[in-house]
Amino acid sequence: MLHRNNAAMHKIAECLAYSSLGGSGEMKDATRLAVVTGGTGGIGRAICLRLAREGHKVVATCHPTEEQAALEWSTEARKNGFEIGVIAGDVSSAEESEAMMNRLEERFGKVDVLVNCAGITRDSMLKRMTAEMWDAVIETNLSSVFYVTKPIWNGMLERGYGRVINISSLNGQRGQFGQANYSAAKAGMHGFTMALAQEGAPKGVTVNTVSPGYVKTAMTDAIREDIREGIIAGVPMKRMALPEEIASAVAFLAADDQAYVTGANIPVNGGLFMH
Ligand code: CAA
Image 1 (cartoon, rainbow, N blue to C red):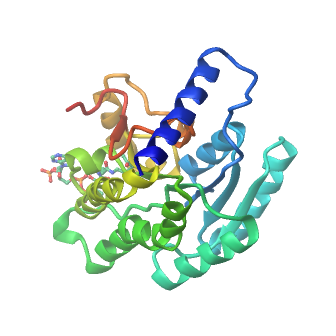
Image 2 (cartoon, helix red, strand yellow):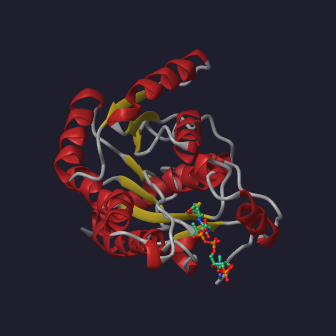
């Protein structure tokens, strides 16, 4: 056991040495298979493209109703030199998630990097929030993380390598007026991260959270304009994040030579919330 750990440390040290010397890439990451749920959404697309640029083989998952649009995007990405597979499945369903991940592994291979990025909002003050609004957000944003990670988790442990990255939110860290459902789900995601990080650590599997602030996507475009302007005014950087800025944090956590950060929650919020 100790011997195996020493061997793993030796490999990481060698890898770091080569990269700091700007080496030829002899020790560079093997091609890893990265899967991004919600991979065709605003943040998801940027993550897929960034991981592909880093040399990963990438598969985006999308909701079955978005499959056609996702395939068209993938064709477009291919023209620009990015090979991104697409697979459809409803991550708010345990059965569909398991079937999707099994199909994915049969078609593309074993998953090395999983980015849980699928998410929705159903904003409302609690006094008007229905059980459907609550359930939709908890199932899609939180239960999905369990449903999608579970089918591939044992494989990561057995192979002794894995990166699980959960895309949470600033609003899971500090709460947000009108988002009791979303804030609860996003806070829950990081609880999942911290628990699973402890289970993965002895086997070389890291589990981390990235908590974006307000990012320029269709989700934030849907916020009422006056409210959105008020939010931006409150951000110390006076702007929303670009999806690529979230992807950059994900790429850091997904790298082979980043093997010692685990159970962390990296905020990418322009200074809107610090603790
Ligand atoms: N704190 C305290 N009071 C607030 C408040 C706040 N943040 N926001 C609104 N209020 C008050 C209003 O001043 C208003 O008070 P009065 O009745 O005294 O005038 C009252 O609450 C009702 O406010 P609204 O008119 O906004 O109520 P509404 O029912 O029309 O809309 C809402 C409610 C849909 C929640 C709307 O306020 C809203 O969209 N808020 C923004 C929620 C938000 O930030 N969502 C983030 C989406 S993006 C995302 O989630 C990505 C991510 O991870 C960051």
